[in-house]
Length: 183
Figure 1 (cartoon, rainbow, N blue to C red):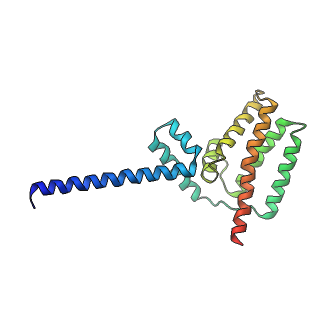
Figure 2: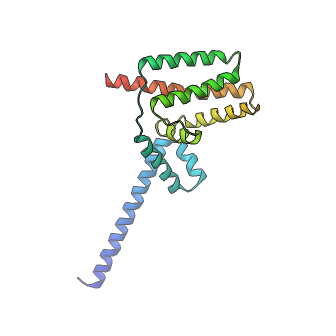
């Protein structure tokens, strides 16, 4: 084999390797964007794409190592009733209803097996299994913080309860779907 042939083979191998690397990265990005949706877009907007994707992969890896479980039917019924009481309380005390909603979401997450340390860690974990609702959770929490500082209106508090409810229902419903599939 002459030198020219060897160089052409090396160039061809580099080209094929580069195309394979590019395709693999593109497919990885598409998969992460498809799974995480708005959370993917939010992270990419705040930094570089590779770093954002590595963060999302780390989150998924961390959550896969957790022992997330479905709620038992009795637990689910109990939490659904607590939520009904919380929503009814909104009429008389919207601020208390928001605080209770936040606590209920956190408690259901804890019972299901999510770590409930600081809020940002909770959001990161919940974004893996509930990526479409994580923005609602952030918005509700932000309103709850505004309420503590006395900067939230009743309309803000109403929106917070609606945001909390979407995640809360998903946390409860997920166990219903899991049990139906197991039957």
